[in-house]
Image (cartoon, rainbow, N blue to C red; front, top):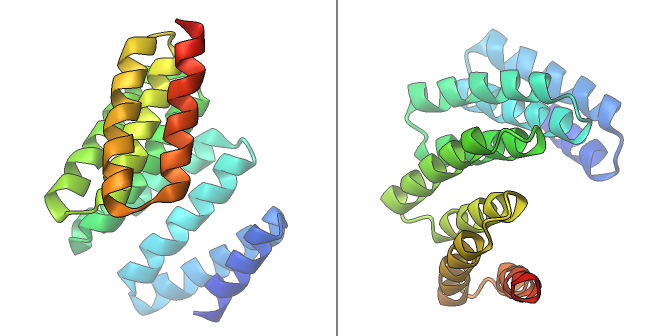
Length: 173
């Protein structure tokens, strides 16, 4: 819808308060007409903006509502993406155990539906958490697994990120 599209444009430009306004309007419209798919999408978008703004509790609240809807409508891809988003917020909060739990659940869903890109991204995210914890061997193991997947699917950007992360950690060992 156009309100969500305007929210996306504002988000890309870093105009976060305006993005929130558009996403909220789009969310209200989706709720009024019973469009659960759009409702979930807008809740996720709001979560992303609140995460960027450091409003973590607000982000978690929106992500959990989006997750509930994704599960209700059986949208496994969005369920997995939302779980990954929750993992990122918990990492930002330093709640590493929660972050790993959400990332790993996202990885399981990605495997179930054959979403290699999300699987690789979230393996890298788990590696990041282990790096934060100083568990470098665990981090390298996850980065290598992510690297293998990213090479398999031709995701050059993530491949480069994985190689950089592995190289950084070998310097710390």
